[in-house]
Image (cartoon, rainbow, N blue to C red; front, side, top):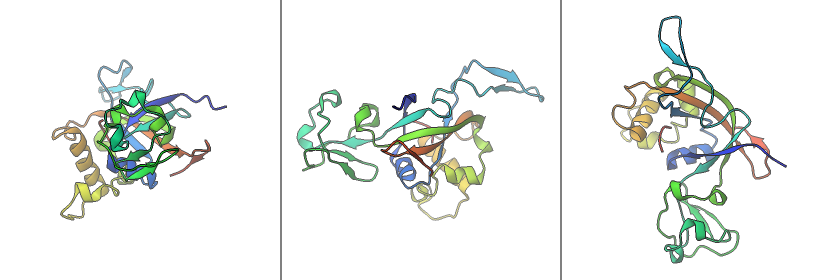
Amino acid sequence: MNTAIERQIFFKGAMVRAILSGQKTVTRRTLKMPHGFWETSPTGELVPIPANCPYGKPGERLWVRESWATDAQLNAIAPRDLSQGEPIEYLADGAVRQTGCSMITQGKARPSIHMPRWVSRILLEITHVRVERLQDISNEQAIAEGVKSAEQDIDPDGNDYSPYELFGGLWTMINGMDSWNANPWVWVVEFKRVTQGMTAEGGGDDA
């Protein structure tokens, strides 16, 4: 019986697609102030100690919340009152979960904040956690953030930006104009997907 601790995590559509395709295996989330565990570096800078990450530690799990919909005839039904046999459409890629009734007409878009645990289709297992400055990301890590999956959204004009530049654009799109230049401390949470058989396979806010 699996007893791994689970926490929720939110992803926008492009990042959901990147996870499903195996392109996204890491996420960066702003380290909220005050963190509570700080030390002075050799250069005199106050830096966070990578402890008590709110997203968990290696071996623990994250269930993904994303935008979704039920059949239109259920639009007035609150998420907590839905039967688990109802069809669910995942708006990131249009996939439909059918365990009983069939989807006839897609209903209203429901935000990720209202997704019950049983609706979630993606379970992640944390493999590594660290802290670093946002702009310290490498090109390799930017690719692991799934920027290639969102490249058309970030760079619709085809300017051939580097993965590093694409990630900067992605972060700004999600978090606002000055968020990249602020260069905050971030949690770097690496993960792998967990299959329905509970074996791991490789491959609103933040990125």
